[in-house]
Image (cartoon, rainbow, N blue to C red):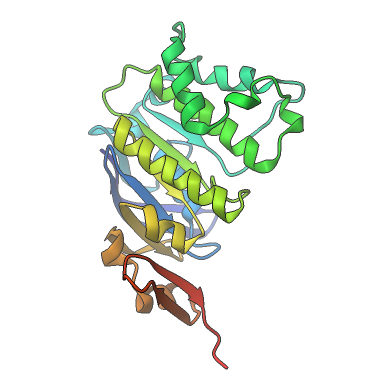
Length: 258
């Protein structure tokens, strides 16, 4: 389990995260939602070990992150940042291969092929990073992160994603989140993803954390947490809730009235 235990964080004189608790489980897709400035990316940095809380603690497999080296953490969790670095002149295959660096082992063909298939990047290998679209670059970094976890011998592993669908059109974004949910379930990887799209989370997340002004407003199973009144209060906008005739599909859209 990757767990936040009442963590708080100050940046300068401002408290940006206030006593937030969260349990991310292996095999689940957990989505962090909230308006701009809610603290979503900062919370993900705490979960990755990039930042350390002022109060509370973050634990991975029962051990505090603060007591673990960067090398040890790299074997247990992989991170795809919102604006990942694309080294000039590199090919896609070279960047993906860096995912296996920390394991210091030969990459099996099966791990390589699995990372490519799950990220849909096999056709991009010979491309230079500078030639990629934003969406393609996100998929390449996803492949790199997946390879990092696939070659690790850690009994628990977690994939942390900061707005991994932000550069994708709605159809490709939906397919990406379907793929992430499949990765979590089939490989037993715990995935925590920061998103802005309410409906992607509503359709595919197992668990949702709603964040506002650095505080956890609600956390739990998606259907229980994502209801109209609560979302309206968090985002400060009227919403219309749409349901398909068979009641199998729900969606939220802003509703300004007439």
